[in-house]
Length: 464
Image (cartoon, rainbow, N blue to C red):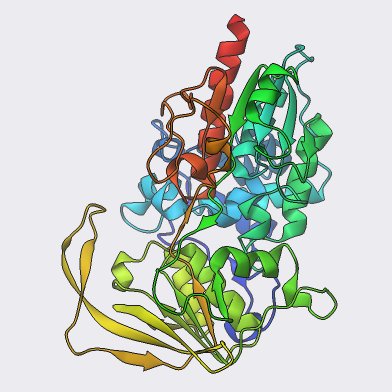
């Protein structure tokens, strides 16, 4: 008989007034007893609507039934049959708008805690010596993966399982993409990412770091000279956007990319033990309303800023950030300045940030995104006293691959054009997916694109 409790079992968490001073993981997840309890809430629906909401089609009811029976290792096998990074997804996926949104239990209460259960299973399996998946025998065909982020890792894992020789070419000195340079330690421990990547390496996936495709080697050279039968481009969207307002070149102004990369990948939170400092001063303003803005704001608080402001030109309902991230930020003392837009960053005589001029906004008619367009409220100009400004309003793909690959069709803003059903680009044997196609989006959508491309590559090469 299913457990008909209407509410999702809360996960254990650090106290907000403790965690906002450290970079340890906020959520402590479920223990075994809690996982079994929550799993018994699943109705094991015949039509499995939750699976439809998952971009990588995890067999959700099946793994949850195994959790309910205490068969945690078997549950891990089920998850990993379609998801190469379950410990990551269990932490950073927006389940509330995907699998859990489709959960039948959500009609008269809260949905089953699918994400929390996935995280528990992955963590349990890792800590109990789960066996590495065994690929099919090598088929003699090579595939190159450009970018070691979520899309590339997923595509690589799926193709390696099928027997392909797979090499990931990563521009940075550490693979993982946004998982290592973007998402903070307190949301996604980097050792866990390394553990997930090691599983792929143990399967036989090769990773070459410090390889900038378009500089170190071109995409055409991979295909024509290095013997690769296909290439998947999953290079992400790492080119930051700015407001284009006066003062963005002052000392103390960061793009969110630089700010978070310094903190996460270069461990600025350990300065002076590490040699990468980040100065946040007493007051920091984060411009933007997405998950990246929440990550930057919560990181600034942990680095010692007394007052951290989220400055966003729309209202809270229009914020693209996950509800959970906004909730955690508020608990940790982040100050939200809604319907506010910066017009100038002010500097002192030495070229350092000393303040930010803003205007208040009102919401007008919906724009192309469906959100109400913000318009300036007359006579509302005011100044915020800040020492640091982080611009977190989105990113675009780096144009390097586009500029060094003739015949590769792209959008005006730089995104690679693909067939959505297959991930095929305008170039033969070249596929793409993730943020380099869509612009900045979620980890799980990038992973879904990696799976789609892997399937299409296999279908193409199986005919050759």
